[in-house]
Every structure is written in C-alpha cells, then in structure tokens.
Image (cartoon, rainbow, N blue to C red):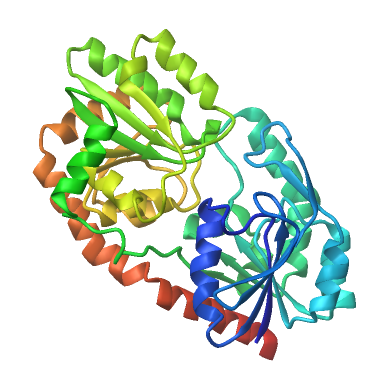
Length: 384
C-alpha cells in the first residue's frame, strides 16, 4: 500500500501521538510505501528519510490558542503536497488541525481513501470552556471528518464511545496503543537505577513520578497539592514530573508557594532509552489526569513494575483494570489517601503491576500486532 500519514508533529518531536505513529510506521514501512507530511517544528523544512519512511516537512507557522494543548500548526503548501503524493490511504491523526480544503483534496483531487484515528477523544471534565469548545468543534467540523472518513480507528473503547457518533460505528475499530515492553522492563540494572534516583536530588520520603504534558488536563496541580499535604501530615513525599508545556512556570510557582519547592522537580529532554530507569527508580507512578483517552505513560510505568495510582476516567480503566489504585479527579485527599495506602504495601502493588504487564500489556499492547491491525483495516477500506 501507498500510505500518506498526516500529523502536525512527527519525530524527533516526541509526544504521545508521535510515539505511536513512529512505532506503527517503522513496522509498516517494511512492506508498504510510507510518506509522512508534517510541520517543520523542531526541524528544518524539506525532505528526509528515517528508517525508509519518507518525511516531508513543510514550512510552518504556529499560533497558540487558549485551551488547546498544542499550538495550531499552519503548514505551507499542505494540500499541494497531499495531491502530489498520490497515495491510496491518507491517515489523518489530528482532527483539530485539518480542515475542509485538506479533506476535499484527499477525497477529490488525490482520490484517496481517508483514515482517521481518534487519539484525542471528546474532552470532558477539564473545564467548561475546553469541554464546550471541544464539543462545538466536533459538532461543526470534527463529525464531518468522521462522516467523510472511509475508516475510523480509536485508541480505546472510551475514545470511540465518547467521540464517534453511532452512525459511524460500523466503519470504526478500536486499536489500542502499544508499549515496547522489551525496553520498559522491571528490575533494570540496580546501579544505574540508584544513580538516576540520586540525581533527582531528593533525600527522604516516598518518591512519586508522573509523566505527561504540562497542561491543565494532566492534573499536576492536584498532585503537587497532595505532596504538600503529605509532608504537612508528617509523611515525607517527593514528586518528579517528566514533561514540558505551558503550565511549567505555574507548577513551579505553586510548589514554592506551598513550601515544597525542594520536593517537586520538573524535567524534560529525557531520552526514550533512559525513561525506563526513571520509572524503575520511583516508588509510585501517579497519573492524576482529568481526561485521558489511553494513558501510554501509565502503561510504560506498569511495564516497569512500578506501583500505579490513576484516575478512573477515559481509557485508563481499560488498561489499568484492577492492577492499581484509583483516585477521584481534582481530589487532593483522594491522592494522599491512595499514596499512603500504596506506600504501606509496596510489594503487593509491585506484584499487581507485574501481573498487568503479563496479562494486559504483553497480550493487548504489542506493537507488531497493533501495526498489523492498522494494515488490515486500511486494506479493508481499499477493498470496500
């Protein structure tokens, strides 16, 4: 197949969606022709090849919009580039950044099939403006893309059920995200793990880790408040957050205001190869998201055998099941209670994480199997 992948960001930019696309298409490129059309954010405009994947980076201007986790990327010559590829399948991965002229180019000028993946489900529970804005967008445009799509995939059952109208379910499929569980492993080299923990600079107390873009939806504000409360209660706790985003200064200011600046650290730029050591170094992974279609970072932590606490929202319960402890959204007391409970019986929760790795991650989140599922549904769309 000739497949053209459309996403405003791509490797070396490495958010959740970008990680998914790289894992899928490094596999599909072994037996299909893959072209990625993306922005030049983080790179120079032009063409390059990564693992036989052809990358076309278009000159791009960005505009930050309120309540959107990523800036809007306006790519010069996008429609002309699409028409020129002459692909059979055009795989759109962000319905918030592709508009009528682009969809018309795919369907009419390029005469290709349109595949849409729902990585970001309809927002709910973040704040009134974001929730209403997401719904309004889908009513006025997002659902038109779903109507025009020849095939729709979603990264969780929750993403499908909350976002895709019933009229379009017959052409829709749930395909979970994968985890490289040969990279994300428990019991990694002890000396290096100890070195990572020491490098964080904390002294006493339970070490919590969280990984996610620094936006309102990830719930870091409530996690920082919980760390302050734990320390006030005489239960020393530290927090290491991996991520970047517009909330960084606000989160650091909150930690300082609460008197725990030395117990909260934010870091980014950690390589994929080093990330498993950070999960291994932590006592507990905490995922306090207000909205989460899938929860890839949580799966990575579980694959490393790290005891896990998470909100029971979106696609999280589909992965975590009964292998961790649940908390309420926006609830500081819920986080503190869960942290005390898990830290008092660490071995039990480590055992649960390892069971999740064996029973869920290795069976349902294998990248080779997931890539094959995408290939199969694309093939079905071409034959329809």
